Image (cartoon, rainbow, N blue to C red; front, side, top):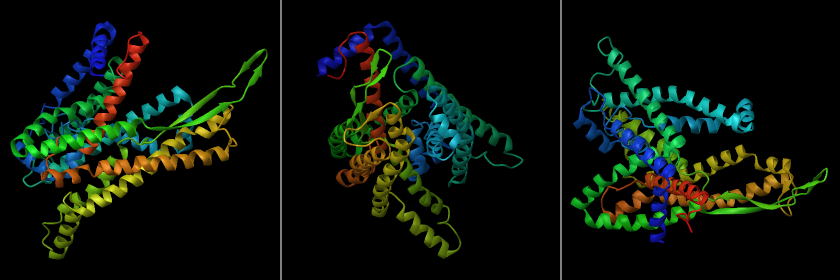
Amino acid sequence: MQSQIIQSVVNAFRLPDLRRKILFTFLILGIYRLAAHVPMPGVDRDALSRLFQNNQLLGMLDLLSGGAMSNFSVVAMGVYPYVTATIVMQLITPIFPQLKELAKEGEAGRQKLNLYTHLLTVPMAALQALGQAAILTRSNPPVLTNFGFTADHWLPTVATLFTLTAGTMFAMWLGELITQDGVGQGLSIIILGGIVAQVPQRVGQLLGSNVFGLIAFLAVAVVTVVAIVVIQEGQRRIPVHYGKRVRGTRVFGGQTSYVPMRVNQAGMIPLIFAQSILILPGVIAQYFTVSDNPTVSSIASGIATTFSTQSTVYWLMYFLMVIGFTYMYTNIVFQQQNLPETLQKQGGFVPGIRPGKRTEEYLNAVLSRITLVGAVFLGLVALLPWILRDITETNVMVITSTGLLIVVGVVLDTMKQLEAQLLMRQYEGFIK
């Protein structure tokens, strides 16, 4: 198997056009990593480092920015505003009839929806830049010393917001260059590069403090990666028959195919949803723990403790919310596909199931059953840091559970694209 993979890599580099795509991907990724180390002016590095040790929200944003947030660089927000805009568009498309019609118009409709997503990214990025800068300004000690809408600070404030917003659009542009001229899905590749770039530093921390913790993490990570691959690639194939249609002297249809329904259609989105909602009460409560009113301070301290990663209640709620969001997001995506209506228009039907409403009920029932497996699995992946904390007796993780899911998913998708490129040229691929 290893020799096959090595030979496939050699074959890929022997092909000039494929070699150019791979090298172009690494070049763009290198440019983004360089930009991730260009700092914003007026940042207290020591205060920033201390803040990231205690703030869960910034830790999650750092993950999705590819490590650029921990440096508060010009691309500190990474592509997270675009991810947020994409999720918002997916959620509101079934609500607005105009967007729903666009989704049914094929490639032209998808391009217009993509344009709307890009336009929505700009205000999303500006709002997120304002929120992140406000958190860094109000920290103790303040990380940003020249931010605020006062007479003395308005120009640096506008420059900071403009730079962070422009940095997000620059990161999106780099990602689209990879998608167009490189290998893989560009935005995912950029996030992957940032996650992997943080691994050596964290491995060094564990080597110096807890070698057993590193060994235990690697063992659990290997098992988890295998499980992620199985779940990500797992699918239920629904057989579909197409009736014969006669047009003139030609006969169309009469074929048998299948509809693949993936076990995990939601990807890592439920983890991001659940974590974003759970960490918000704790972050807000932290600002009230220093209140002069003892009652307010006591309540805020209790909320902050309950919604911290040291609390068992936090992890239990995290598990349940991941399951709930998995069902919600999967159902939204499935409804947007409008599969029963599409099958009926194409003359397809599930054997033994009447087309139309009965087919919709059948597919929804199948989807609910297989989603349970994916939802519980994502919930267990979400609990991975809590499990490893007790096993390794350390809070330092080489890679977070969300990051591990992203890495495995992106690597699988990229390998499939390379596989397709090799098979088109009659080479043996990575997967056999």
